[in-house]
Image 1 (cartoon, rainbow, N blue to C red):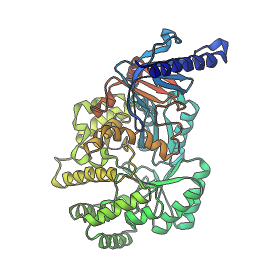
Image 2: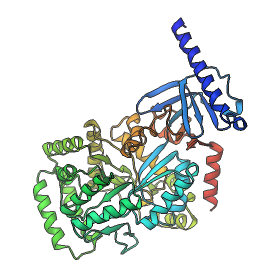
Image 3: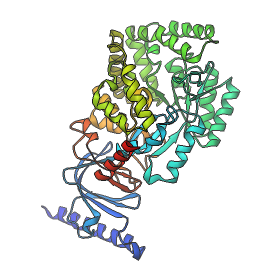
Image 4: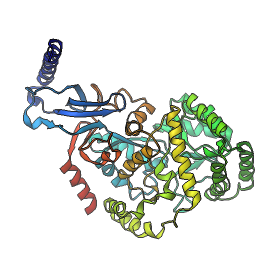
Length: 491
């Protein structure tokens, strides 16, 4: 080793020693009590890629130092975690969940997320009285719950899709009458403390534009589905910050996109007295596969260019978008995850999952899945921001476990494992302007971390090889995580 390298090493040791000395002297009774050394571990994050053989020092709920591995002379053995051969990532996000979709599952979701290394979630639609209590609970006990960001109810036009009229349409949404009503609804949600706004498919262009403009004035971003009376470019140009599920995107890329839009508007007028869910399905059935089979490369390029220019991010939720070709409950191993749900849900899911299994996928299902995978890769190549989300617990997607399946599907679409990790770490942090605190393994960041036994850059499925989870500085080792799973199974 040359002299400059030796000097740098000595300086790093002195710096670390002084840092720990002064930090421990602040309270004589708690010297190093809340400090830990993760020693000789491999760091993976979207900014720095793979950094081998690093030391990470945690104090309270922060990362206070990250430096190349060196001999430890400061920490007692009980405060050292040997990371040799292991990998540390930022805590994961599931950027599309629903606490209100199946209310009896919600009480188990915090634990299911944490045991899967998910330290932050974004709830994308539910009545405030059903979702805000979970945000409040998470904020009151951050070491034992994931960070929760909420949108409140879906702001929809009429007829409302999720109006609570049937078990398959729980009351996730609320109707907006006009632009003035839209402005008031957004203002009310902002005052209630939501983190972003969710716009839905039945909105008029005028109401949608009022939602976006009012949300912007309140410092809130707008996500959602492209309203069926609009196309992707007009929604993006209006200021929509992100789009969920790739929903209705294909219609704007069809050779006859303008004609399809005119037809949709007429169908919506003709069906204005029908239930919202039925009307929406009618429109999708009439146009979705036609659009997929008649894609115009030039229009497709124009849409992607608009999304990139306007910074309109995407949450593909491939677990849902490709579900017709990959029905999770048909896999016995997946059904095993149902045992971690509350008893009422576990019994119900186990009973109905196979009964509701769709017939063998038809050609249309494979065509749509192929389009979804291709468009996600094209979005990534076009530098459009992508976030990982799953829509759990919809369609028998067990919370927590489903996020790892989404990462697999993102890689199947052509993203690299590091890009998939980016979609589940730094991207959601950036979305909520939290990139200075979350999403990287760097000094000053909050200690939300995931430790793996195997390298996810070699195989993205290795995100499931969880050794430990750290949430707000609290360490959950493998035994702790297994105990949580056992508690869930027994309840």
